[in-house]
Length: 587
Image (cartoon, rainbow, N blue to C red; front, top):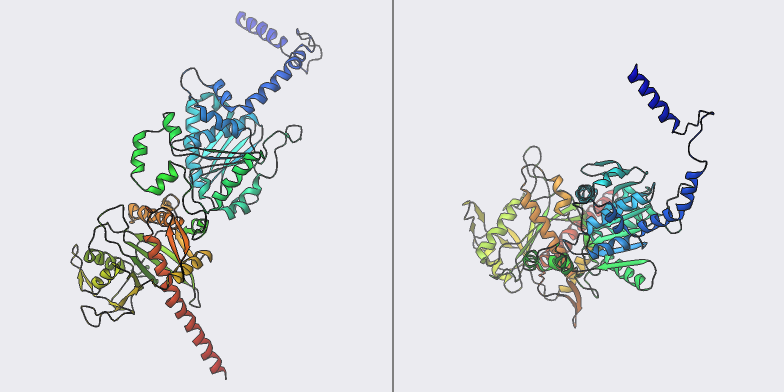
């Protein structure tokens, strides 16, 4: 009883000290409107604090930083955060190790906390890429700033989607740069690795998403809020691309005080602040020159004037989602009825820094009438430098057989092997016209003949497989054919390894797929480095940076020329003959 009485008296006292709107006889011990006066007296200070923290996200994180731990924000990170909170449009071209992604996500979370019911989208070339990047940084933020967890209501991440809901109703999610995102609505957005995003698709499906502003709790639109803000984060890409034109436009807008801000740096900033090791920079410097210039110098590469093509066309052509490293088989174990052409550009140098031999495999896609609608570059390989002609000939014949090539041309899936016969390429052609044995498997690879020359093979009556191509006098036609296939969207390339690795079938070596995708990227680098040059009677291409090869481009350009000259004409002639026969039979 005593304990119950004590509990009852404490409970009554507790109730009396609380406001009870349902008890008309209740009398509060607090003077009327005293709290209201406190709020009114400090309302301007509270508004000033909120505005200050919205304006300075780095100070916001300083305030919630735990006594031990947290992140020591460097000067350039503070500048990045503040510009993201003050400018309607930002472009950050920053090298690897520059902490651009973490800074981006931290600022997005800060905006969500400071703006109730705001919706923010994170966009990358694919939804999988956006989520992978975001999830890692989400975990880091909660580890370094544990109090941020109190602001988050829920966080859900899967392979291709992410969504974080905040206590105040704000939401951050990811969107794909695809038509599936069309019609959605968000208030702000950020583009991760924006140099890889398809501009046409972005303009049509993504940019309109951010056109409707956020409204406040009173239903009004805050004129000082950065509604429709779009931020871009990337390493550098290619000159003569849509993204290069975008950053030049924003630089001009920045100088004209039109609300844009462009932030650029190279590897020296992360090195200065201890976020990158000099050994990493030196190692990268010894590797691929293009990758180093893009990833660590943030140098936009290629030709700005007179470029061979708009490189965005090639980036957009990377649509092949499934690797094809050999001619596939049907359910019965028979080779599929595919049609391939193989192009070879020849080099003989012991130095890895010099030109390399390149072998390009094209797959032809025809419609029901036999007209070529697409040309898929299903594989690109480069044999090691320093191989003699005999060793290179074995590699070419191996690839020929791998894609269903046969000495019986009626059964062969490979229609021709086009070899650059200029200078040293003639040596490879002569070796291909010899009988060959695979030294590793002892398999007989056979002897080939040429399609278009009087060269005699070692074995008489060998099948005509090699097309000996000499570009003198026809170089302009070869270049125009290449441009036509790119501009007409008939040429298709492998996607990046990150975008296709989920589609790799069991039994396929991932390192082979990765290598094929990497060679595709190097091919794009080569094309970006080429510009048109007028000669006295024709046009040719020249390299902007001499250290960047053009062998992969040459092998592909020669192959497309052969396809255009013979295989497409063959289909047109066949269709015309059929049509004429039909008309005659009608009479």
